[in-house]
Image (cartoon, rainbow, N blue to C red):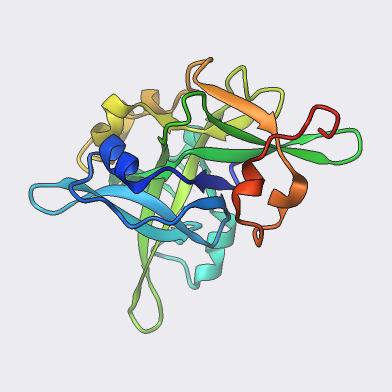
Length: 226
C-alpha cells in the first residue's frame, strides 16, 4: 500500500524531469494524504504533450453513485488492473504519472508501526504509475481523481512492506501515458524498481497525522529513537 507521498523538489527540476513546456506552480508538500490533491502528469492537447495538474487522490470510477468510493481506491494492484471493474477502463486508456520525490511506508514493530521515508538516493523526483478518471456529480460537474499503482516490494522494501509503488523509468514515461498503447504491452513497466535506486530511513510518527505537513516530517530518526 502507498498512503502518503512527498513532493518538495523545485518546480524547475520537476519541469525538466517530466518534459513540461512551462514551469508549474508547486508549493512544497511533505505529507500528501489520500483525498487531498495530488500532482499528476498526463498527455494533453494536439499534438499531445505532458501537462501537470492537481487531482484528488482516490479514484472514483465513472459508474460510481457517489464520490465516497474514492476513499477505498487510493491504490491499485498492478497484477489485477485489467480485471478489477474499478480500474480496468482507466488502465485501457487513462494512465498518468504521479509526481513525487518520496513516499512513506509503515513497518510493524514490537509495540507500534514505525513509519519510514523512501526516496531516490540522488533525491531526484520520480514518476509513480497512476490511473485517472473524470467522474460527473449530480450537477454534471467533472471531478478528476487518480489512484497509485502498486507492485511487489523490491529487496529494500521487503522488510518494511510487501508492496511498493510501481515506479516508471524515464524512458517509458510517454509509453505509459499513451492512451493508444496496448495494456498488455505495459505490464513489464510495473516491475519493482532496481535494487540500489532507493534509500529508506525511519522518521517521526507525526507523519501519521496528515495535518503535519512540514520539513520535520522528512527528518531521519536517530537509531535509538526508531
